[in-house]
Length: 361
Image 1 (cartoon, rainbow, N blue to C red):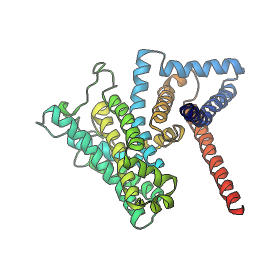
Image 2 (tube, rainbow, N blue to C red):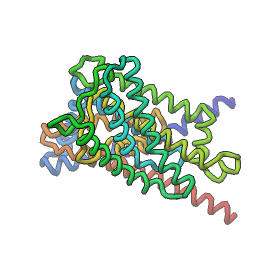
Image 3 (cartoon, rainbow, N blue to C red):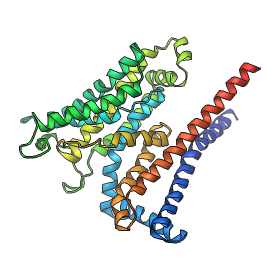
Image 4 (cartoon, helix red, strand yellow):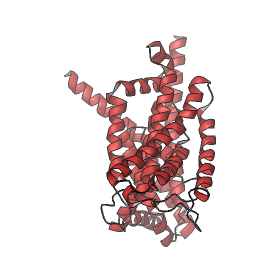
């Protein structure tokens, strides 16, 4: 009987967790329909069919669109998981974007080294991305833990430092003559494109899926994960229980950065084969924030959310062909984020009222 009650309570908790994300997606899609009605002068039914058909065909309608959707999903898995680890520890790692960029740089630099066998070169490229990402994130983590500075401000600044540093290296020491890129990495440093060289989806997708399982195990099946989540839920109670807040802040940021840096390395080794001069941020790190929020910072939720955002991004070209502005994708994403954020605010207000009621007796 106790097991049945436990199972039913877990199911209810899972359903309650899913309600807001599902509602936010539905509302976002229907608001987008009204914008299509306004832009195209169509009725509600026609606008709905036009929008959903364009998104479906652009993301899952053909084998090519499925492949391209998976290409978009791959980096979002890494950046979403990176943000999820930080969120679970009560941290806001806006620097995932910069850590992803540094992973791109490290992979491009190490990938250019000639004469290394593939079974050594590929892991070396991936590890270099992880290490530089971990280091880049550990710096603001250390400053927050030891000095008390705000990680949001520090990571934002680190993003710009990363972008300008990488651009300097691309246009300077690592520049391919006459191009705004590095040379192509060695063949021994490339990840296998298992559907053929012309299709950009690669084994980096499976690395991302494996990471989903590993992050789940880390957070819910290990002592380290328990401590990270305890610090995120209630740092004062965690410290009272003998858990070091400072150590776990630095550790969480380093793990988050390592995942983001690995994503950047996979992006180079599997998709781009080179680092390209950045005229702005890649956007994958910032999209990862939305992916983690919609996925409730749970690895499985991040996977599903990454598929949704990857599908939306992949369908942008098809939307333009259907005379729908591609900016409708950003509108949908923004509305989803607003509703998910509203859920967090609602819960925060509810918890605050409970505490006040307990204090007032």
